[in-house]
Length: 470
Image (tube, rainbow, N blue to C red; front, side):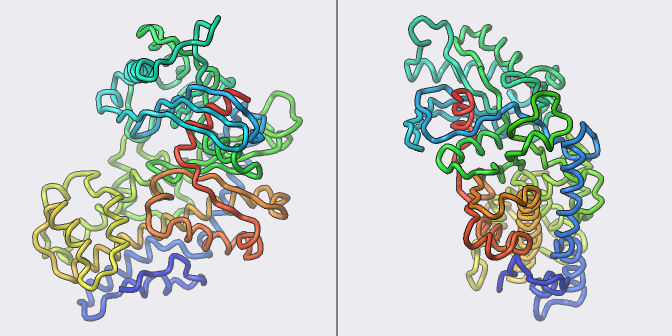
């Protein structure tokens, strides 16, 4: 089956419906697929509307703290890396799935070396023991790499990447605004995450001092900036999604300090349009949203990030099962459980171009234990995944374009964007589609000649060390 281009180069809704019609299928199935495709369609006109709303929301968030606008958090990071910094630093990177502890050595020639250990965050840590868990992991890392404070120092300085929304109060302090990505650690929201971590270090006799706390997007921005000095923006398209960019301080009305120069601003763009005024929001998104622990928040993130795409697809698949248009109305115990349809399965399904869709068959029948499927069943599942994945990449490109368009003076020179995360790395054609969709808004000349997207792999950890150093 021809995979629809994520770039129907027209506002024509037909371009988002036609590819999902199955020749020879019942009228009822094709009509239902048409209706579903209409709901998920992010047409060019829709994306323009989203970009306009994004700009309004960015402006409002820069002027003041407005619960209805993008958070636009000043990060206190105001020095660009030059690529000549040298030295060895410790970095912690707390993400949605892993805690990474790294020793970063900057070589001073835009290159760096990394010794790191990944610890999978346990369910227990996500729900209660997080701070002690972090301290224990850092203790293990120091021991295994035989790291001690430098001569005459009591502590090892450390940069800390914290991938959850915090309200920064200084370069090494920030209060947790809320948990997301399935974390629910009690007595943490509203408190300083550096204090909470530092206290755990003391309890476990770990000689480490956090000297800078950065959001993971800021880390990605700084890592990319160390290797590519024209970096303007850092983005995560992974388990969650967010971005940070360089902004002139005279545009940041709510900044009380010196207005000269520029500062990195953390957009927290997962929170865009929580009121769903402009987003192409469907019943399948609403079902995910109403059952999630942060109901009504991070609505945009729930449409484009890896933690949620598979769950939106699972909801849409089960809707077709309940209408008895798919799998003859049957499902499986696995598929009936929330969050079992991993976004990684979506990637495999979308990439399958075999005539019998044999990868799709393996995922459905072997991994998810669905009763034997027909070719039509498999086509339907692939179509559903494509509708949702296409919407995700188009919304991602719109957000990236909106931020770059908010600094139009930059578009005459070369611009690098550092990107990290599993969607960008592994979802089929994600990078290619970002380029393709963004040219609608940024123009062919800029996209072909001046825009460079770079994978800042594991950038968030390295970036924290760079911030700690600069």
